Length: 287
Image 1 (tube, rainbow, N blue to C red):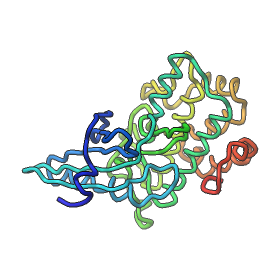
Image 2: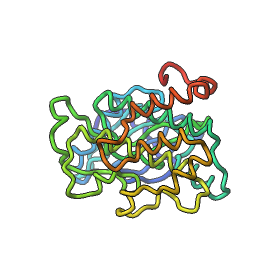
Image 3: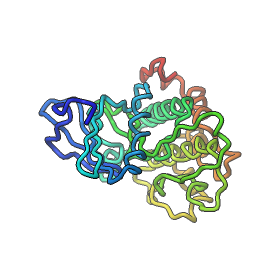
């Protein structure tokens, strides 16, 4: 056993469960939560190590940074406890609430969320880290509804010398995964992973823009990906203008050679919506 003192990883109240573990709160006024991951063998334990390493290595205000961990051994099981800052809710919960009452985001809210998410994903890419599972469930909201990227469990660090190597394992969530990830015959290199993250960001933003639209863009079939919903772009343009629709469309290009990177997308947002971003008080970590 090593890591945090056991008193710092108490689990008083169950919060929820994800693909990789369960999340608990502890104490009435705690600013932290604890994620418990159980590995049944050494191989599973080794597969969890990247989440801990990447979580400690990232230092961006909109990335959920680890605040400590503890590893215990019970017979053949490894139990890993990871401590995080406490957030208000997930973007998924927020979207579901808004869909229920058909409350749309304002243009200012869309631009702020879009730019913050693009900035933190670009930060990860600059550090050669690819998230590979960007979706509303992995985006948390703080008390001011600012988005924070979380759950780097599917993330991958790619050294410069391995960028042109073939991707060995496809990961992600089908409704937000790029078409080249879903297609089993795709010949992808690690360099292409940044464009897969770009597609996922585009899917999240399309869903945020289309609350109340008759077809939810997060509910798709594999065959739908190629012709990405022309009526959706028309609806985004009607609600928020042709520039925002054009920027989101750039992330959702089927062909990799045509798809915009997250860096290019952030630059587009700053070029077209600079006044909104300044008015909303984004600091030097974002602009």
